[in-house]
Length: 234
Image (cartoon, rainbow, N blue to C red):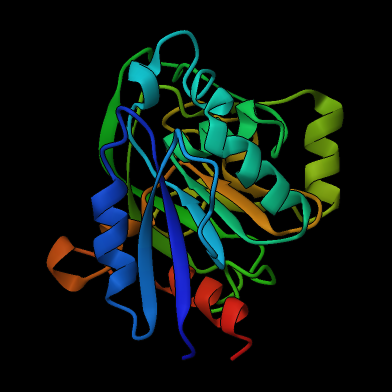
């Protein structure tokens, strides 16, 4: 694999930035680069990750303050040029608040913070983030969020579905898209979506926490592998 510079944006309150750094640094040729939110330079990054955590303490709505960080102007421009951007958990919330992804992430239906292992199904393996997976493969990846309930208008949901922008759904271990598996209440069991161009992905589960066997699952590792293969053209 050719060298890849992977920019990880750090906001006040980010707490999965070093988890992400550790996960991506395990790939040969990948250089993680921590980018402070108040800067104005992506420093030659080939791809950007917005990590999980509680940016600005999750005051107002999750991600609603982080979207105004100076570096987010550069991230938005980077994405609009077709460059790859991945948002994990709070990063997904920031992408939605920034207008890079459609819909909203609201309080879990049970009104409680949920931290647990989850099953998600790959419903589109033809993206730059998922081509190392099999279609409809069921993954075991943890979640940790209080506002992961994906919501959008009926028209937006129809558009996401018809354009193949729904990438992951919450399921049971057998891939069944059941009500019980949809623990946060997301419309259509949606766990992750892309923008229409396919270069921006947001998902609530944490692939960096499922990147090695010691953590109980390596199912998140191939998401990073897919991304890095795309960046290097390998």
